Amino acid sequence: MIQMKKIVILLMISVFIVGCSHKEVEKNENQDEKKDEIIEQKEEYVDNNSMPIAFYRDTGTGQIVLVKDYQIPFVKGTDIGLFQIYPSNEEEIAFQGTFGDFFYKQWNTLDTDKTHKMGFHLSYELEDGTKISHYVYDPSTAMTYKPYVKVYLYDDYIHRNDSWYSHIEEEQYNEDTYLTSIKLTPGSDINKVSSSIVLTVFTYDTEDDFDDNGDYRGKSQYRITIDNKKNIDSR
Image 1 (tube, one colour):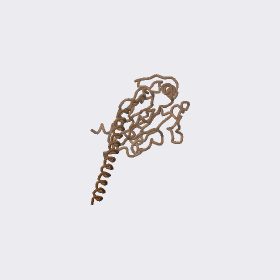
Image 2 (cartoon, rainbow, N blue to C red):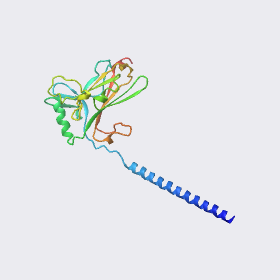
Image 3 (spheres, helix red, strand yellow):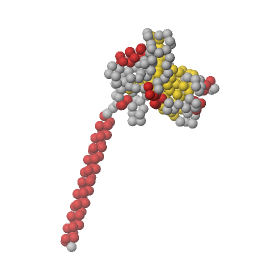
Image 4 (cartoon, rainbow, N blue to C red):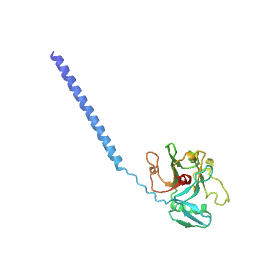
């Protein structure tokens, strides 16, 4: 009987020790998690990219003019607009020579370390309530939503000596390509687009310029809103 009591007591002591050990492990794990949380809270995103960027319209007279919000009918097959991109925020800029040369000189003056890249974002809503968020970085991502809005990219620098040239094809795109112009054209289902189109150009130099959802969060950007004049006229 005494022997049995000893066994029971030993078992109780063992359970107590194991329980304490588990609590200690849990305590340490909780402390480690709190430390990780504290470290994560201290890491704040800071954008050091000061590259100016905006959409411009080439007047054909040696001057580019800043593009602002505007209205145009969204008609299948009829271009919404062709926009030049230039690293500046000035209202009007005069230049000599070709736009491609002009862009190349200014871009490389600002991007001396060759780390900056360019991207675009289109956002609009369909009549069924679907919200489109379309990021474009190259020809392979340009036609993701082509039934609604087709996107064409141009390199005016590589064609600086050509009198006529087409948009960049996927097999032509490489690390030396400059995205100097973008064109939007309504697709076959443009009538399903019920809202304005918000077009943004942005530059980025690190992966941190995008949040966990892949959305751009930097400050080097310029945005315009394009309204469907047909919707406005029918009100």
